[in-house]
Length: 138
Ligand SMILES: [Zn+2]
Image (cartoon, rainbow, N blue to C red; front, side):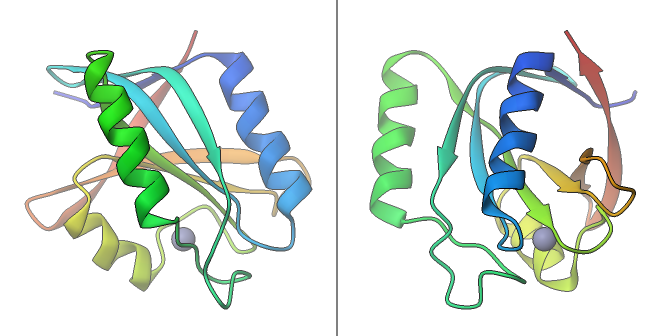
């Protein structure tokens, strides 16, 4: 069965806007919601500050801030369903992303504006293989 990321157009616009204002640095955001079988449903997004030292090619979030958000989500019966970041390059996982995907078992949503407009693609690591996740805009 195919994995799906359910995301509102409003949230996708906010993510792309975050990518645009952060450009040429990589923008990062956390996606919270629920996972039902193969569906990753986003209810809420948190735009984050990129704290990586070379933030044009990588991203990092403040671990304390991330921990605080995870605890808050759990109280609201939500979980981390995805991690968003933007690329100066095509919207495909980099080698570094691939390593991080093995550690963070959620959907990875990657944006790029290589074609002029921001475009996002979603991926998931399964059995050490990268699988593309369908975007379902709601
Ligand atoms: Zn990346």
